[in-house]
Length: 308
Image (cartoon, rainbow, N blue to C red):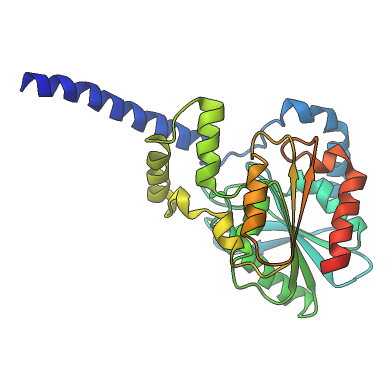
């Protein structure tokens, strides 16, 4: 009996410690934040360019659109920019983790110069949209379906739609690709999206925190299930891309150490629809545009000439 008790105490301490760490990780990564964290050190050199795009975004004539406008706990907010040429084509841009629609100003500017209207939502628990918890694109994908339907209702049945996202936004449009999309959605561009949030978390646990997958990931996943209604293993770009029927361009930085480049290849292999893959050899995470904006716009333009 004493030996059993002696063994039980350390095991209980280990279990308690694992649960404590898992709760801390959940609290670190999943509740909303009401500010945009500072960018990584290697991207500070782009700050002046970034704020030039933000200034453009703030000054360009725009409309504010809503979903669930009269339900404060469910209200979602987006910016719509109408191109003056009225070419009947709109890009819907999905932002990254802990970002918001303003942080996508450079991409909005690029597509606007290519003749697109631009719709930029704030995801749940980001920016001006409601929500307590970040859901890594899994619930957001359903909100984007509603944004698509709103766009068609406002702009007409003849509107052509491009889906575009970066990082978590890239994964969001990848996961959206597996849904029953309206025919107006013609193509998708996903920049540095992860293959699954479980794989991404396991990778970050090892690389950033030097922690094992077990028991941490299953415990965080269980907490997430209690708070948001789904396990982390449910959040899979790969599973959704297997159902995709739209042409898709994958973009990924070759030196990405946050979402490893192997995930781009996993997403590419999962896709049976027309597809292209562009690895920007020397770019880090979400840096492909900043590394060479002219090359980025050219590569996007070539894809659109073929499939849009």
